[in-house]
Length: 420
Ligand code: NIG
Ligand code: FE
Image (cartoon, rainbow, N blue to C red; front, side):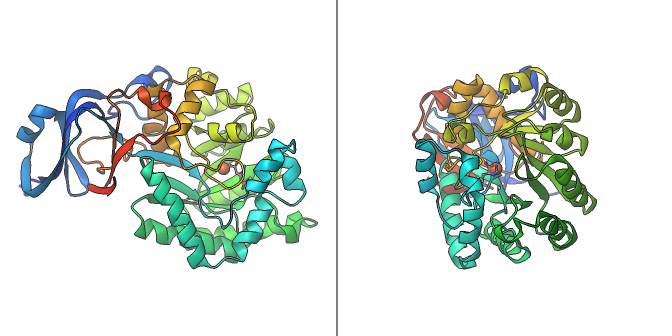
């Protein structure tokens, strides 16, 4: 018999222990299931969860290691560490001037067409040394962590040359090794056509297909490949070529789809077996059916709709038709500059009509599915990583309701307190 694992960390007096035990993914009514234990306790052994149960029984269930750390939750709520499945955290400069231009009436696409938007972030990133970019990105990760986030997907996409994209993916790799947050890397070289290929976009597509994707895949710098499939960026046929190449090189697929117009991006993502299609503000009914059928996760980004003062994705329709729905910040310097996943839960409540329980499913179990890690993270079960958030609230429904402030008390990553 292998030696019994001993508890190195124990939390007691948890008013509501939200384990998220239950179906993976959560679809339809399953999104309301929280695996909730009232008056709960949880024990970890090293990096893993050892046991969950009632507060007064948890100590009896495990052997205590010498020096086991005790935390009294004083009736607070405990959830799995949150998962943010769509972020663009590596950028050099913020773009508040564009935000103000939008307030004054310019659209996101007008600003982009005039050379602003993603292309301005590309110019900034290219001239910023990796060390400087690393510090700025780490600061954003610290903020994400303080809001209860323990795993994120992190995209490149502000380099748009082989060298700068690889520089970005290296930064993500280094931060994954040094920062408590787990970063899952996505190659987004097809984020936009950079300035130098505006008159010759075909050459840029060929560089993506023949140079960047093969290199990123063979050097294992990314797990996913993403594309901004949108009118005026990469159309459906270009997206099909680029993403088929990525798939053939063993990269899993994600799409920015149907964000600003209905282009059939969700249908293409489903057809190619993408792990997720994200945004989906203008998804068609056939797109919704296709996603429900394929299991491609719908990652919804209410902060982008909010920050662009635009329309919101048809979340209720997606849930009612049986699609897997996740939520994310889309943290980026253009369309959604926030590190607050809890604020997305408030927006999801008010704009998508998603209850607190549905949103919790969307930022844990279903967000894990959007990263192809369903059942491996996002739940508090023995054997899974001890990624845990303890909240300053006694009822989880306070999460969307008490908005605009940080309700996190303690964040635990792999069994260690990393924040609070
Ligand atoms: O998800 N839509 C494309 N990409 C980002 C915005 C990037 C930017 O404006 O810098 C998004 O909204
Ligand atoms: Fe995005």
